[in-house]
Amino acid sequence: MSRIFYAIALIWALTCAAYAQDFNALARVLPEDSLIADDGRAGVRVELGLSQGVPYRVFTLRDPYRMVLDFQEVDWTGLETETFLQTDRISGVQFGAYVPGWSRMVLELGAPLAVDTADLRVDKNTGAAHLALSLRGTDFDSFAAGAGAPRQPGWDLPEPAVTPVKPGRDGTRPLVVMLDPGHGGIDPGAEAGGTNEKTLMLTFARELRETLLRAEGYHVVLTRVDDHFVSLERRIALAHRAGADVFISLHADILLEGRAHGAAVYTLSEEASDVASQKLAERHDRGDLISGVDLNGADDQVTDILLDIARQETKPRTDALAVSLADGMAQQGGPMNSRPIRSASFSVLKAADIPSVLIELGFLSSPRDLKNIQNPEWRKGMAVGILNGLKQWRQDDLVKRSLIGQ
Image (tube, rainbow, N blue to C red; front, side, top):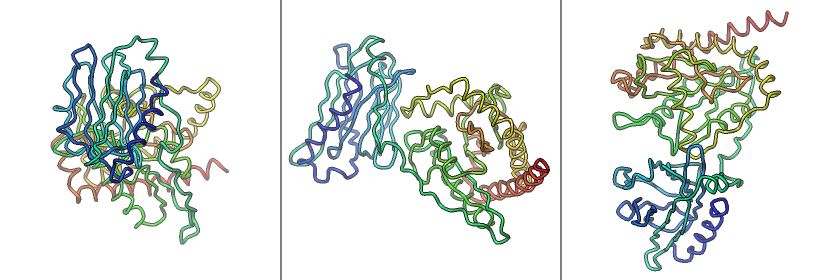
């Protein structure tokens, strides 16, 4: 039932269009009319008040068990998890922007649940809507058989336009840099001091882009330009489509393991350089799980071999890039982590043919780092440090590649 329920939900929602004042406009959540609670019959009820009716769909995912509700589209302002979630049968709830025009809510299920009934009612006079879902327990086999995201066109970011890369004044081709501000949309990343990682990293990515463009010799593309969710897999695909020479993912996490303060640069490795790096990689990949994305795809044996061959050439260039970036930031005053070069199995760094690094500007769990990252002048210095690191790396890389070609 779960696999086809999303289509029924969409059709049912569309029948309410006559009652909505502007059915395709942004709907606002009504927190006072919204609740997730036990229904008294060993089930769970999900009540969601909206300022107007909108199309929606419902589906389930496993490993871990989740129920996903997509809306076109909802402003979640004012909805607080503490008051909204009133049952321990739902272990967690996330909500936010998903892709342009769509919003998402993800229920983390403590045990397999299925939709028993769904009812979207729209007030004929006000246009306000009320969505009511009744969830019932189901067995593991039935849940697994019905789980899976529906395949529909238009449910990811539109394909980016291909912009020709123009030669610089000296005739050399600009370095194509893909900047990847971490998290976004439904996935806020780390949260501290009244702010969150996704907002801080998007701000820094925009500032870094301007710094690189003013320096000339760089063509800069961002994996996201606003507050929308982009899957880890798609971030890599966007880098390939842009013809990126380097991929730089930007983060500022919360981490209690190890000495979690100061900037650090991470490279890809199946063997994490330390426990803290391993925990960090797990946190980053979980963002896709929370947002309803399955990360179960595995390369076959032949593909794995080909990727390993490609990485043999890319890895030394990536390692050199990490060192140059760390040196550039250190020369701007940092502060840097006591171990500024680290490695772990970050999914976002798995492009085999593009030197890819992940920069932790600092950790929001450190009051000093949080203060720095919120300071525009400090961010300006870090942007200059990254620019200097890229300059040095490109110069060295061109020399090494010319020697290999001889």
